[in-house]
Amino acid sequence: MADKKALRATAKTLYEAGRVTIKQIAAEIGVSSRTVERWSAADGWVRVTTTPELSERAHRVASRLAEIPEDAKPEERGRAVEAITEQQVVDERAELLVRHRREWQVSRALLAEAVRERSTDKAKMAKVVAETTSITQKGERLAWGLDTDTGKKVQVVIERE
Image (cartoon, one colour):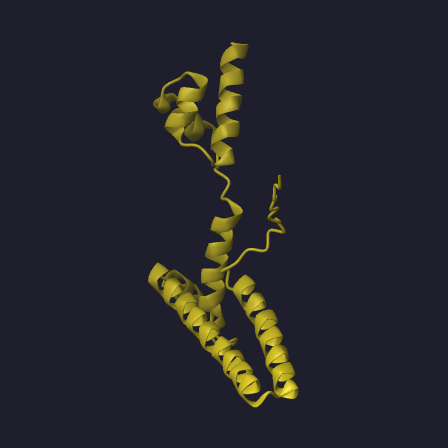
């Protein structure tokens, strides 16, 4: 009997982690997928949503709510959130990317002008504009969920003989 309890506990842990399918759980612990389904329904197991999925949903809702006036009724806010489509989310982020690309054209134009005129002051201005653009866009990309700042660093190893 303890063996069945241990199997059920293992299945619950795997299920709630949300990283494997019911079939994979069943294969892992040696029971049928139907048994795992029955256990999950009987005990009310709940899968944990991963952070990227939660972030994406939150960004969709935030984008939609930002368009609604502050004094809107709760029902109006609820309807607006329900109406969110994936295509709208993609379109909004695509517009942001297009704007970011256009903003870099300003820095390039300033730099080209500085080189043509051999102007150190204009070159400095181009540098400041580029740095400001970079900082602003990094913040926007994080806020819109286009980049995730995971803090992971890439290590490059160069081997020489």
